[in-house]
Amino acid sequence: MARFTNKVVLVTGGTSGIGKATAEAFAAEGAKVVVSGRREPEGNAVVEGIRKAGGEATFVRADVAKEDDVKQLVAATVAKYGRLDVAFNNAGVEWTGALTDATEADYRRVFDANVWGVLGAMKYEIPELVKAGGGAVVNTSSIAGHVGMAGVSVYIASKHAVEGLTKSAALEFAKQGVRVTAVAPAAIVTDMVDRFVGGEHSDQGKGLAAMHPVGRMGRAEEVAAAVLYLASDAAKFVTGVSLPVDGGWLAQ
Ligand SMILES: NC(=O)c1ccc[n+]([C@@H]2O[C@H](COP(=O)([O-])OP(=O)(O)OC[C@H]3O[C@@H](n4cnc5c(N)ncnc54)[C@H](O)[C@@H]3O)[C@@H](O)[C@H]2O)c1
Image 1 (cartoon, rainbow, N blue to C red):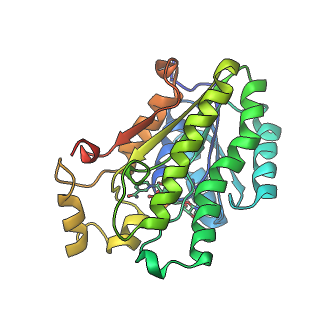
Image 2: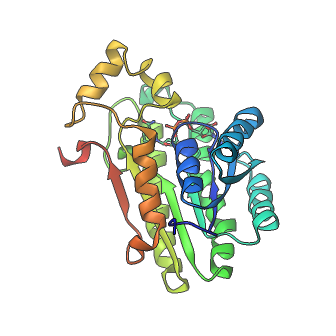
């Protein structure tokens, strides 16, 4: 039997990149997947792709920076599929620049999506996971949650916050059968890296790829594989950790 047969999985930021690949991977393993994001046409396209491949999915629009949206998202998930077993809190935005150029608006935009987007989601997801008799949350952190980097301060701070939230939530709900973990990718070929360095094949992209000990960037499917492991029963004694999926970056 597939690993997630009859499991209900919620994916935020599911309209592209890591979220899309992970939603597809969960569906391919038998899960009923709620794909969430702000962009309806893209979300519907992901759902259509999953259905064409024989999977079960539905799109629910939500901006994770808005508490009401997230509350409705979790309620809509339970209304549609009856329960929640796994939540992948993955939506996020990047920021680059000199620390001295950072504005309050930059800070709020990044922290609203990357930090509140995880905290607010867990606030509504975890009670449903408890009701379902236990479950798993996986948050998308980054190598930027583990180390500092020049020129990325606001993003780095937001992903360090995701690490702290992951550990605290894991401890708070351990006795109730809810595991909370994170994945910490290095550079993964998605729209975000396109915006960050102008794509994998630009000079900057090649430079970034070369910073990984394995000599390349990762693929969204490689992050999805780690998320599925963390959400699965194979990881039932694993909680409060952040798993690097980084081609060796953090070993340096
Ligand atoms: N690509 C990388 O190199 C990399 C590395 C480490 C961590 N990450 C993290 O992975 C996650 C996914 O990013 P990606 O690389 O797939 O890029 P992406 O830009 O394709 O995906 C991010 C998704 O989040 C959505 N999103 C952003 N703000 C949102 C909001 N307020 N409400 C709902 N959805 C929102 C975007 O629309 C998009 O679909 C992010 O949290 C990112 O920080 C990416």
